[in-house]
Length: 244
Length: 244
Image (cartoon, rainbow over all chains, first blue to last red; front, side):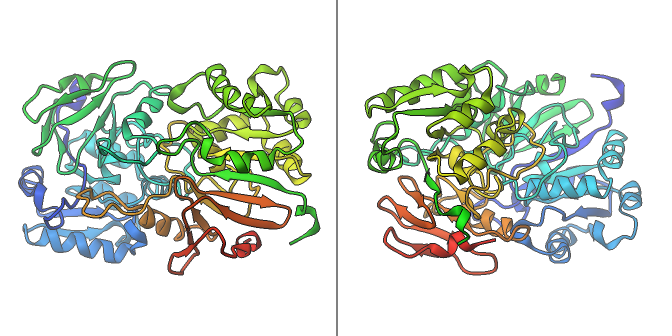
């Protein structure tokens, strides 16, 4: 790894809420490790799940983090969004629609500031769409393209793509739409970067030049032209950070 | 309806292959009605399901139509794709990846010729992605954005959007990704056109200024700001053609 990546501090979560647990509950331990020593967080609510307002979405995040002693402000509360990112102790981008999210990151000129701050060690946390945009492109999102974006290039905080909410084929299903695996194979007809299928409850933790899979389940990793592979939480997945 | 739409002749099919039937088999009766009096069909294989080649994909379509006495050529077999569309007796766009498909329709300058020919009565048939691009935009595709497209505006052969392979929420599922209904509600935060969720085995038949739902199942219709509605095969859905 090159030296300029050694201070990265990322937590990329598949889903904010697993079945039967509260908002961010399943990731509590990792969230606390990510934010150790910080007392505030800048929340970016642009993905607006279900069309929820920036204000209401931020209130939801605030409620979760306040229990952990972290104060939350929404980026929409600032006159100058770039300044807000530049001065943030840590950033959390929540889930929702990935196209709406990325479009707003570009519209508010936050792509470069986020890249620069993360490069210098500012903790970054994403769930779902917020995890998707941390990858090389949004080309493996599950979301509908409900607004147009001028490019699918994402924040590129990691050199691979992520497919959050990764789903295995449902046995006995009579549905004839493409499986997730088929869709990712189609992605690799046109793109070379690895894709990590993160199942519900899984997350990737990047600290400096190390990457680890957290949660209980294995992740499915797709490399162009190769058979899909499974890696468990203890396995060595360093090669993902060396993708280009 | 305005007079210039009275000769339209479209068949928009959710899926090429339903569970337990062969390619296009479930739609045979409607396909034959669409193509009555025609002996050839131009196939547009751009969507390349699973990355299949244009040649192999066209061979698959050819096999199905030859049984019905219709000869098939692939648009890639012509030096001049625009001329091929302009001279076709009928056009069929097969499923696959909607982004790859629409990108190639624009790259080969086929959007306008297809619109003009359909307007003048040339039979048009689509399955899955080929049905999606017949709508106002591709904003309600289920596919991954594996290539970028300069606009999501589609062929606009009908004034609404279609969601092929429409799926109802799976009861008891522990998956936390958005349901199809949630995704379409998010679409309506940013777009006003109606969305028709076409379940597997369903199709829309447009003849002149009439539209009918075919197949055994009902379709789920989403209007901006209203509760989703169900319409069965015999129901009046004319309002869909009056959307704007």
